[in-house]
Image 1: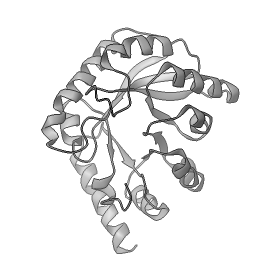
Image 2 (image 1 turned 180 degrees about the horizontal axis):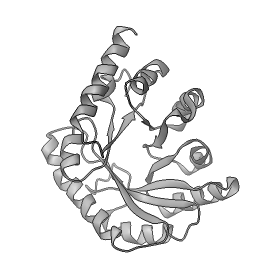
Image 3 (image 1 turned 90 degrees about the vertical axis):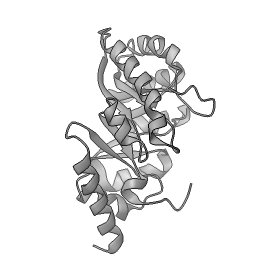
Image 4 (image 1 turned 135 degrees about the horizontal axis):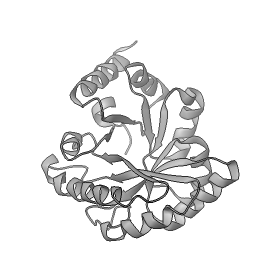
Length: 225
């Protein structure tokens, strides 16, 4: 290994030591090279997340099913067909139109895909996600789709600033998670709460997250936005 992969290996091991065993670490691999992703896997990462389909495909095709693949970026409906073919979990379902499109493509290949519904917990106009007031209605509708299994919720929270400022966003998402857990809807299993990134994952875990999506703290700063 070279110094770069050594650094990634050490970062992975350090983070895995700081999170509880029941919390899943998703390595957010946006802009990372195949060598960097491989280094993370060798160090113990078993879940990899990508923001963009076109960037993920060559990495997924090379690495294959050695890890679980998460779609963690905004998913356009014209990319839904490719997404259901290659990803194990889609964390960013935020509309009925997207859910319907995913269902159609899943039915065509007879595949059931695990999804999380993304909540815009901060009600920020520049962020994707269903508003907290609308999440119950959306999940009720998705529960009628045969090939989508809602496994929980996802939220972004603030990317920068004081990590403690993210707490209300995570608390609101956790409250929705617990409320929806009690409804016993078909094909809805409130199993995963995906919250927190490099700057906020410790706060997210305190507030109930059992999936954290970490990029910079694993791989170092990105060369590209």
